[in-house]
Length: 238
Image 1 (cartoon, one colour):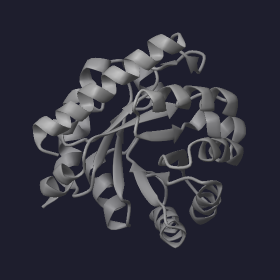
Image 2 (tube, helix red, strand yellow; image 1 turned 90 degrees about the vertical axis):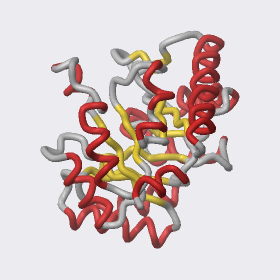
Image 3 (cartoon, helix red, strand yellow; image 1 turned 45 degrees about the vertical axis):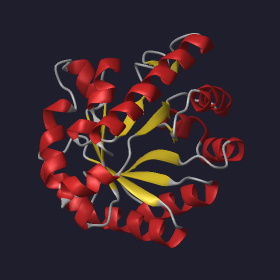
Image 4 (cartoon, helix red, strand yellow; image 1 turned 180 degrees about the vertical axis):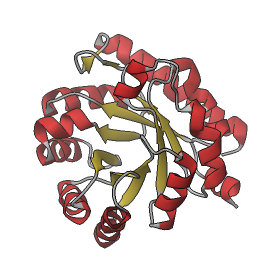
């Protein structure tokens, strides 16, 4: 059942806007949308820098694109999800390491406001078990995430370490995030992770949280990723 559900979800390319201002985020999102990116993520640096204003700015400029608010919620789940939904978010992110009551509160708010929930298994000692709990509590998607600090302390760590086990454990679409290379991205749909994120350090200068290349170069990189990921989905019959 799980594999059938995941195959039915066509590959999606999501750009992670890990910059601290709305002006930078909207500018990068415009480039990404021109390149064919499907989903827009208000990354954690943007939420720290501008919070609800950052999400509102993206929603105003891109009224028809799904917007992910990467809240990494650990507590106050209902309120955080409610506020982001009212600001225009389509998805919010809750951490598996939060209390399960928090996960359920996020899910409750999301259902009331017509948005969806991504559950992030970052730092879970057993990522497959954490993913199962998140789905049992109502999460719509799972993020297999190797963290920024984790992979800088141990560069050998990668989402590939846990992806197969998580994909086998759940029957919802999966996303893999954290330190992946450009050449990894079109392999993800066939590996059961059709929600493909392009972000730091592929698009963002990870030391300064700013765009890593000139606008035309960035658009070309994103356009190529979109082409390859969508083609990989067609080849897999998604």
